[in-house]
Amino acid sequence: MSLRQVLKGTGVALVTPFRANTEVDLDALGRLIDSVIKGGVEYIVTLGTTGETPTLSNEEKIAIIQYTYEKVGGRVPVVVGIGGNDTQSLVKDLELFPLDKAVAVLSASPYYNKPSQEGIFQHYKVLAAASSKPIILYNVPGRTGRNMTAATTIRLANEVKNIAGIKEASGDMAQCMQILRDRPNDFLVVSGDDALVLPQVACGMDGVISVAANALPKAFTDMVRSCLKGDFALAKKQNDTLIEAYDLMFVENNPAGVKAFLAELGVIENHLRLPMAPLSEPLHQQVKAYLKKTK
Figure 1 (tube, rainbow, N blue to C red):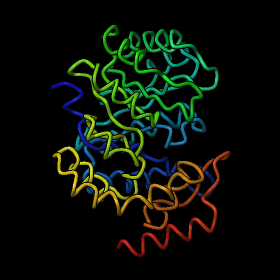
Figure 2 (figure 1 turned 120 degrees about the vertical axis):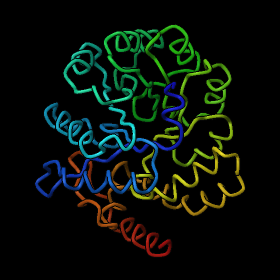
Figure 3 (figure 1 turned 180 degrees about the vertical axis):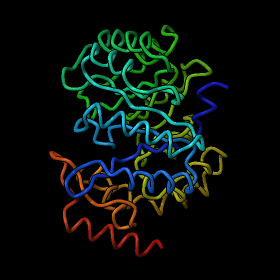
Figure 4 (figure 1 turned 60 degrees about the vertical axis):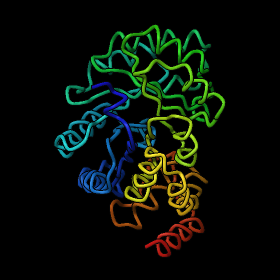
């Protein structure tokens, strides 16, 4: 079975819960994992950007990966995030991190140092050779400062054996359609934009790696399944109820928005590590109001 079949539907990029002293809260992580699986997600992504990975030590990352495997217990597939802007450091991480129970590695393209398209290609080629698991590219130019073009994505898909898919979060629908037109048949293409999932699945995407599914797993996964079945009339009705939630989750920063939702739902405590700060109070009140009216 290809990765495109295994990871069809909704994946959730888990937040990392913290205690008031900013230590990682594994008990809360366990509640979150149970909640999203019960809510219907098809797979879990640990240590994505939503997990505040720039502020986690390698020791914490390894502990989170191992705990996630144990808590998931094989109920759904697990993807591990390993990304950054130092290629050789990532090669070491691919050797160091426990990947035995992962189905794939999600790796964001290099941020801040703004490599050329050739630099991005060579970066991923090195990672693919070093990885024991298939690599899912992650294009998120709003965070990295550099867009990975459709041409680079397709070149990687065709020329590098261990590149198995992409999480595309450019928000550029024309670029998305070019990738979907030209991809190899077994190449996974998923959305990285919760608010654009409906039209992107209509164009041929295989699903999404979602932030919103942390807090609203059933409503969100139901909507994605309607899209994948081709019932876009129902999907639109379902998505219409989620649009306000998307806005609240991303208006200040991610994951402050979704952590406010999760705290109100009693899943985690509302703590982040600097430089991330909790959602401002007026917006937090809007989160409360949204959850109250959608109960």
